[in-house]
Image 1 (cartoon, one colour):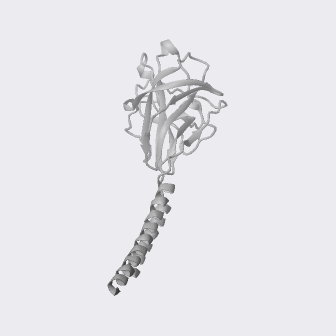
Image 2 (cartoon, one colour):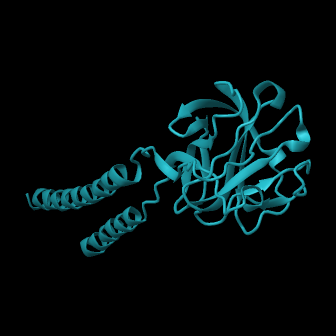
Image 3 (cartoon, helix red, strand yellow):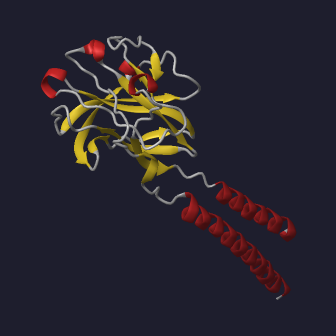
Length: 244
């Protein structure tokens, strides 16, 4: 009888310990499920809307006049790791006849100082669409899924359109200069500014920051969750020491 009672006591103690551990582990798992693995919500990561009161400048690849092809990039800051889903740049709608669909060149350079040898002609060629917005044409490339770490970048989306067929439109300025001015490069040098990068001021005659909107999501970094989870795991360790 004594052995039976002892066995029951051991089983009861073991069961209580196991239940406590299971509850703590369950709390950790629930914590991660609730906070660490929630689906990322689509948001506006960067937004510089156009202002038609400022001079718009060239930002177009001309396959029929390549020496005039010019690429524009704007500096963008991400405070957290992000996934970029779409990039939109803004253009005038007064001089050409641009189609609903076009190829565009997407350039993304890490901003570790002034642009130097970065080559915009080596950017990614992607499909893009034009739509008419409140202040002109909006060029959008969507479905990108580009992951970037927190930091500052130069980002540009430049349409590829023949001058003879579609004419020319101009990249509109943002409502204000945020950070550094936009940078441009005309590799063929036809505009007389050389073939290296230069400030938007050289074309616009005033400080110039191109209008651009970037949509996507912030990659969760659940530091607080990890700390909370670590605390729960620590409690498990304390409980185990006390039980022994």
